[in-house]
Length: 153
Image 1 (cartoon, rainbow, N blue to C red):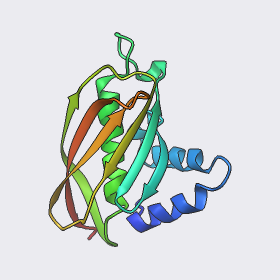
Image 2 (image 1 turned 90 degrees about the horizontal axis):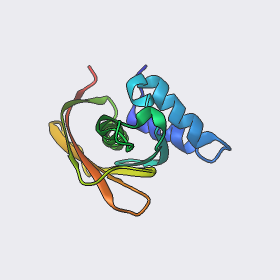
Image 3 (image 1 turned 135 degrees about the vertical axis):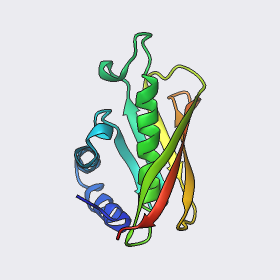
Image 4 (image 1 turned 90 degrees about the vertical axis):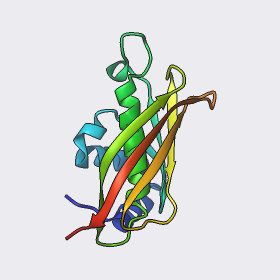
């Protein structure tokens, strides 16, 4: 299933105001992208070029030291950057990740918020950052994704 950026934002605007709409939209994203769905992130805001997601710490995404696993954080950052980028793509364009990197600043615990944004989208490689913060508003991780943008043909 392929969804255009404007279609994604249109579905978000349609579902968000409904009771349970943000949850349903988030679960649908997890169904379309099963690996990213495994962390059960929730979309809080989505508009062209901007995405905000939250992630609730739970046993299934913790590592042995009792904090959110590094790979779960990268997954959250990649999903956030991807939604921000996809929502900004012109019709007929698509994107694929070429590289991911992450910088970790402190243990990630509790409810986390990830924000990613992108300005204008060209037809080449684009770096999109997602910053992940904890409930104290401290940055716990910064994920940088390098995306290749091309035509959907």
